[in-house]
Image 1 (cartoon, rainbow, N blue to C red):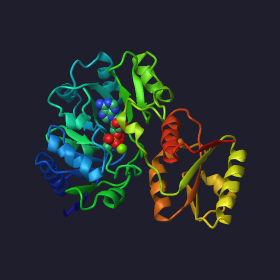
Image 2 (tube, helix red, strand yellow; image 1 turned 180 degrees about the vertical axis):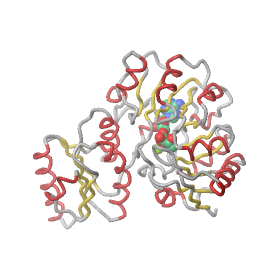
Image 3 (spheres, rainbow, N blue to C red; image 1 turned 180 degrees about the horizontal axis):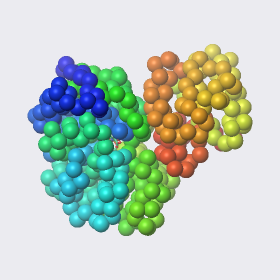
Length: 352
Ligand code: TXA
Ligand code: MG
């Protein structure tokens, strides 16, 4: 299959850009697949009511088909077209956080095919904030099933270049809309249980949700057990984001962290391995490594979150075999960042 790669600017959605989005919408309506930018990461979109489109998505990603897709909508009212018995909490959260990086799990309507929900009786719904994404969803008929647009197991794509790397020749179109602003996937919140549960942490944090609902939510730590055989978000059980090299995350007081990383890097060098390090800008001078990536000022978790997946891909591209990353505090967005970092490291975390 020949993949068309087109560029659309979020700031200039006129003329030719409108035509391109209209065409992308037609591709989806006709059963095809389009990779498109959102504020979190790039998504791989297909018609949410077409079981065959869902099958094509799984095939293009090499993704197990029991891992359900998120249905993306462009207007909050459309929530009721895919979810039934929508609780008040969902409306309040939609009001507070949509458009934006929050996905809600609700009971599904029969019109949502089982192939989209991985056979579950529930459906994940999100209304993204990027205008390109919303316009595309409208052009496609209003309901776009989309997982992240990476090959299964690879870091989620935050640039069109990442989608091209993983999906060129496997999808009909890739829309280049520049860098995804947030860089981590949306918060996934289960509202079908008595106590709302965060299945995947993101930029909409547990505290933000509690503030709106005025009830406690179950935190990710409580819902994520790495060896759980039946995790609530099926996607959480698969190996994720992993770079090809061995990644080690080191957490603790900064001095101890840099000492430990220096030791790890030195051992790797002595074994003749190519090394990489992911760190705060101020810390870079402490390290000797073949590939050094700085996310920004120490503790700037938003900058770190925005750069993490890109850095992991760059480590692969540069052939880093042993990679050390400085951990951050697990509060606010730090919870989501550390969740992805620890997954990418396959649980290889050292506390010093
Ligand atoms: O930010 C995002 O959410 C991006 C952009 C493209 O919107 N999408 C994304 O999709 O990250 P994906 O498929 O890579 O991750 C969706 C997660 C998976 O862990 C999946 O198992 C979970 O949501 N999920 C989807 N439907 C579910 C359901 N009905 N019940 C429980 N978990 C569900
Ligand atoms: Mg994904």
